[in-house]
Image 1 (spheres, rainbow, N blue to C red):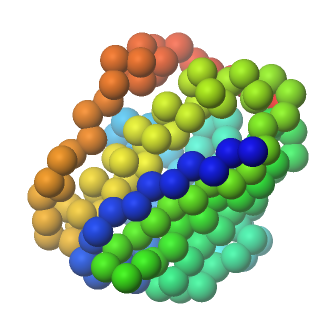
Image 2 (image 1 turned 30 degrees about the vertical axis):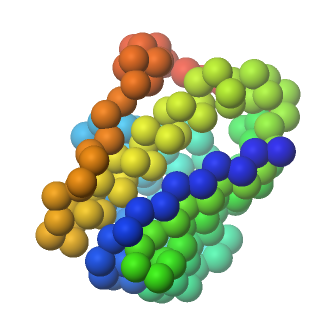
Image 3 (image 1 turned 90 degrees about the vertical axis):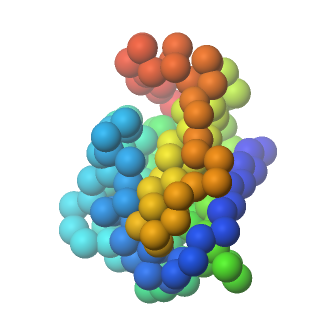
Length: 150
């Protein structure tokens, strides 16, 4: 079972949650694209990661459920918590993702989430106290196109 958690103290978190599409770090990562505005039923993803928005409470939480065939069965949710934002990915890796998650995807996901939180802090008018610095492993992984199959 996977439980991957990221949190950051960020002022004005409810407004920032609703600006997730705008704050997405598309300058470094595959762009987040949805087939309609953020809301329940919106389908999309980034890169090979596909999902559907299964819950959306403006200013409070947005939840995405991974698409079948990805090799991850579960959800990732971005919440507003007192004083900031929290992202939780919960699920089970299946098929080849049982290998891909611990070797590559987890590390890339962690870096992407920290980049997103850095962007949220900047949008709130703050300089991140410790801006994300990608590990040597993330820098190496980004040189190879990953297309795991579930």
